[in-house]
Image 1 (cartoon, helix red, strand yellow):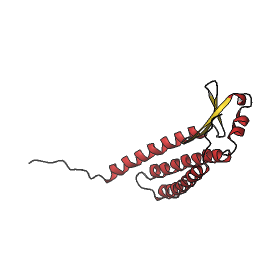
Image 2 (tube, helix red, strand yellow):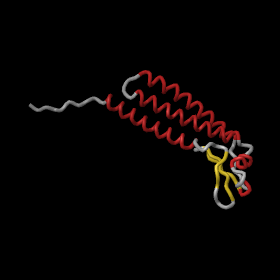
Image 3 (cartoon, one colour):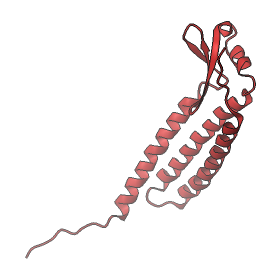
Image 4 (cartoon, one colour):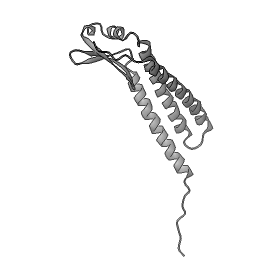
Length: 152
């Protein structure tokens, strides 16, 4: 049985980076909305959506970390009927995933809840969209209007 266990140190490092990022984005997002002004809701919303994506990533990484030493057990717990066919494991950090590979060529997910990747994806798309809206609003309100040239 081949294995690719998640490494504890990279997982911990990613968890710390994601946690600091989430706190920073929340710390920016709420005050940005409160300050008001052009694009404030979009800026703050983008930061909060980014924080949600970071929190979802943390949840997935913590799930991987908790099963770091028990990958075989995680595969067994996820699907006892298919566990006898497991020939190896594969781990992904972005999005967090632990796949139990079967000798027949298929695989099934274990350890990480199935909603993590969709929440991360939707939150990231919302964050980018709102950031682009905020950028456009900023440019619209700060770009001086050029008066038309008049010839007399």
